[in-house]
Image 1 (tube, rainbow, N blue to C red):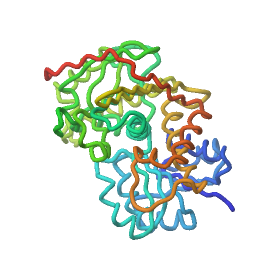
Image 2: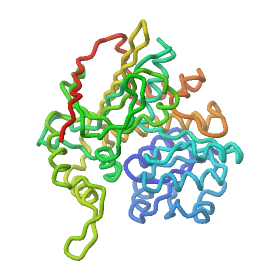
Image 3: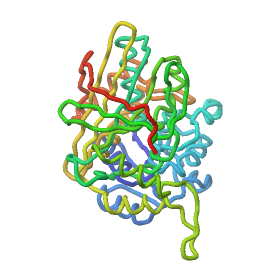
Length: 382
């Protein structure tokens, strides 16, 4: 029986997923709205690829006809529209798109139509959720968890010290989208640049962090915790620069008139950052720290680039591919929406994902109950 999967979005992450799935003997058909991405995929990945606007139901229906499983690696701005269309088609979907909408909005319809959705299947959210679930299995019930994650240059460079390996629009959203977290048992929203801290990551060094809105489904699955937060990691000095940009309005999510043109400052800075800081030399760092009333569990993941693949593509593509392959092999089945933290509940699925990541040399290091050097500044910054 031929194993066929469609991949929507043929950027850096989507291309890595195509590469991994084809290496596992899956027939992959690629789709993107950009002709240049389609041509590059056909040339470099040697797959059939076509131009399609996944937000258009009829176009998507014709494109994925006869392909029961789909990976969506689209930008957040179009990802939810595409997901709704895929649900109507009854597809099984592994979704990486970081959209602002709640995937539970399609859960009822997915169950009715027999569609099976695993959303937020990237690094964070995604692998981070999976590791929180794993910690809960090991030492739970948990009372608190913190996620520290970032894609950064291997070494500190200029004050921004960025390594852009994914969509600039999604990157900029980290600095403007209010971050939800649980503090002292209460759900709160904070400005991403209103607090910060430092953490000493074993083998990497001291990094600074700020809160970002990546918890998503964890706020439901672990909403009873006393503390739950996600923080994005950067090299020291980065946040001072971003706060300066915020102060002068460059991060504002509003439209202004400049020279007869209507622009959004955050779009401009996002494009400039993408052009000047796009790189294949990056480092992905993920720390999951969780604790119960009697124990503590820390996981560390550090991924580096290899050959032509960035660390972010390897890490994100590795987890998403593992989830999709567990579907293709018939290990992971279901209807409706299943979040990454719940993948650990099925031992066969959990072990399949862990073994696949290990084979791809994406190592999850178990640091046991190690105490991390973490300092958080609660004082709001301008």
